[in-house]
Amino acid sequence: MLAAACVADTRPNIVLIVADDIGFSDFGAFGGEIETPNIDALAAAGVRYSNFHAAASCAPTRAMLLTGIDSHLAGVGSMPELMPLSHRGKPGYGGVLDERVTTLAEMLKAAGYRTMVAGKWHLGHDTRNLPPARGFDHSVIQADSGSDHFEMRPYLPMQAEVFWYEDGERMTSLPADFYSSRHFVDKTISYLAQAEDRGESRAPFFAYVAFQANHIPIQAPASFIDAYRGRYTEGWARVQEDRQARIRALGLFEEGASFAAGPTQTAWDALAPEEQYFEARRMQAYAGMATSMDHEIGRLRRHLEETGALANTVFILLSDNGAAANEPYRSDYARRWLEKHYHREVESLGEKGSWVAAGSRWGRVANTPFSDFKFFAGEGGVRVPLVIAGAGVESQGAIYHEFTHITDITPTILELAGVEPTPPSAPKFSISGVSLADSLRGNTQAPRSPDDSVGYEFSGNSALFRGDYKLKRNMPPLGNNRWQLFNIRLDPGETTDLREREPALFQSMLADYEAYVQRAGVLPMPADYEMPRQVALNALLFVYLPRYLPAVTAALVLLVVAYAVWRRRRRS
Image (cartoon, rainbow, N blue to C red):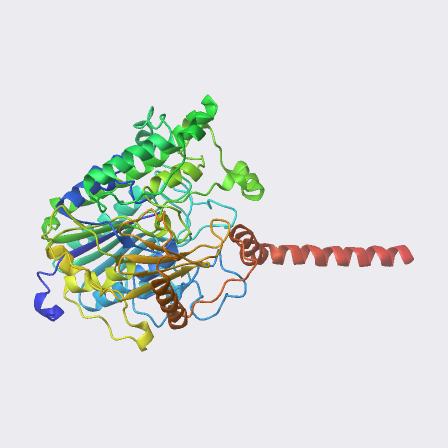
């Protein structure tokens, strides 16, 4: 590999784009009906990866994306919002990036790249874990798991406030016309323009654009939502059937591959007309939000074209996990809070001040053709779209079918940039991903040997990948904590459990998973763990109690003093 200094003027710019909670088949290039012309254009000019896996939740994915190592080793074995009390503070469960890992931005910056991030961070908001301390020259970030897309306020009761930072300083307000996707691209363009004004634009740049679309609450400018009025009235099943047909026509999977079943048309037909209308409107909002993000990606590409940087820029675009299929309004606790802070008027659904999720049925449609969804270990939770296009990508319009992983992004970018990885402080912090650069040159071989395995765990939901095979275990309520075995090349929908047919393979892969647990420091989940209950408890103990305890304590002291004075006066 050439030394960075020798190729300083010709190394490519890198634009790393991360969508939030976008399902595998939401983009047009992956079979979706949502209008995403700019993303589809990138796919047509580059390589689509149909067997790419991330974590089933945002923070672990982001930790692996920026380091190339397993999320537990990177310090983000789980999210603080969901973590059982017995895990908090244990090695691998800090909920923030471990200080001993080196980020992709730090390595690129040391090699002469200009570095910037705009978007969702979710890797800690103490000084040592904000972007300036992790290799970014410029940054504007939403530091939490999410927030409102139009205003500086929380989106669920697990947060009392939201944390925004620019260049390491906490922000106290947002622009009057703020919308998350637009703002993140505005800031990225601004950072690029500042370099041009200072005459620094000859150095290559690394721009990390981490959209909050399509994370709850589903929100977008009204014009994007209104463009979908009248759509999705045919119901969940028919939309999914159309997606399945397009997926097969695109050749994203083996001919005859088994797809997971989805919501039924019978369930749709059983809804009252006003319920069908609401369901159609929520998916119109979801589609509008994705199209709005696509519009902003197009705006960034046009800026690069106008400034002459586009021809030497590589785009890497992915989703952080599969689409969500939860419905917070089903929780009495969450519903009371949402009804106090947001409205759910159907005609303005998805606009400023409203709150809606994709819901349990549309969320499953977004993950077509897979089972499961965000948080869980099925393919719908962990298999996501990936596109790489731009400078040096020779296989235009190609589809790469081999297993790839989120830890592969860092070594891929380093190879494209001609940068050697920084030696780790300890062997366990070495990059475990492999470069995908050969796949951009037309090499269709698997990047790993058939015997190599990749382990995964999040909140007890676990998997192990080896070649075409996958072990999967989900905890209740979606699973029964029992391991299953699937061939995910022939059966990406995970419809046929091979555990009994392939006992030797099953035991061998189970042994590999146990070795992964020891290597990564994965902790067992408490037997009585329930995610919704844990979220509520963590919010009470670590968000609301510290916030209001001083005031409550002061009030109690005043009451005690007042009572003592009253008693004394009464005795006298």
